[in-house]
Image 1 (cartoon, rainbow, N blue to C red):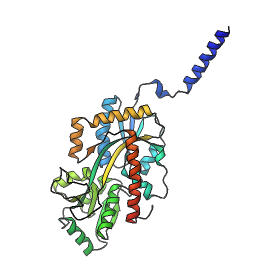
Image 2: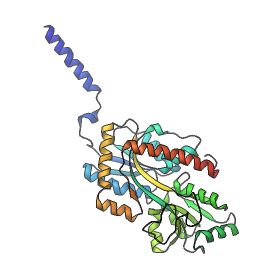
Image 3: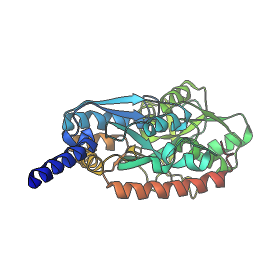
Length: 325
């Protein structure tokens, strides 16, 4: 009888323990669609990377990956939506240099912090490119600076939103050259580039992928890239250093993050899946066509990279003298 009572008690404990195990532990992940938050408007580099990788993720994982654009607020709206989501692997975000690095040095208060996210892996990194409307008479950086100095406060630079690398690159350009130009923020790269093509603004230091088609079509003129070396897609375009501006190397990056508390096994599965996708020849070719370098690093490496980026951009914000938001 004692043995029977002990067996019953052990079974009760086992059942109680199983009741506390989350549902995801009993089912193969994923067993339903995955939501991928894009903290930017459609058509920009964050969106392009999300749709390219998200489509293949859905095919590899056997569940749809639904891209959801949550533009505005310098990526804060999308980041806050991720923070408020269940940490079960079914809501992810294509994080980027803005909400996950620059914002910490630019905003006095944020509704989220680094501890609210679980880095998964870098997806792609790209240089920025200084572009002007094709009708602007400047053919190089020196001529653009001379044009701006001849008309202080008259020229403007667009950005994909306050706090994005495009914004900070424009501020760096203003600081390094000593010119007086007006910042015009948009809710994403696509509307900003559209107005630049239409001549509503003068210039932009954009992520290469979103401006490249317009450069190739002749609607925009590229004056310099922010990478350490020239890019194969624009071999005739000098680097900022070659154009006479030292200490002007900017790399925009985009990578997957999940809510903090997402099971490590799920994070590792997602990282391995994405790393495999980024190694596929077709994906590598497409990213190269956009001027991008594929990622695929480990969660630990990506987390350390993001930490270093937060520190770096806090120094840049202070150096440029941008008022805290």
